Structures are given as structure tokens and as C-alpha cells.
Length: 42
Image (cartoon, rainbow, N blue to C red; front, side, top):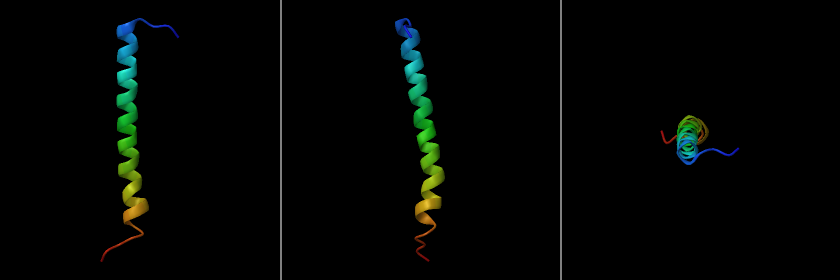
């Protein structure tokens, strides 16, 4: 896939932004359920 420079940069930035948001969402969803729930400090 051979794209012009600006379009390619925008796609890379957009894809990276989506991956970053996805990673944050997954960690925010899984970390409390997987790590905080089993180890309750009551």
C-alpha cells in the first residue's frame, strides 16, 4: 500500500491513537476486575 506522505502520517497517528485508547480502555476494564477484586484490603 503506497500512500502519499501526509495521508500516511495521518493514518499512522490515527491508528496509534485508537490503539492507545483501546489499550487504556482494556487496562481500565481488566485491571480492577483481575487484580483489585481478588486482593481486597478490607
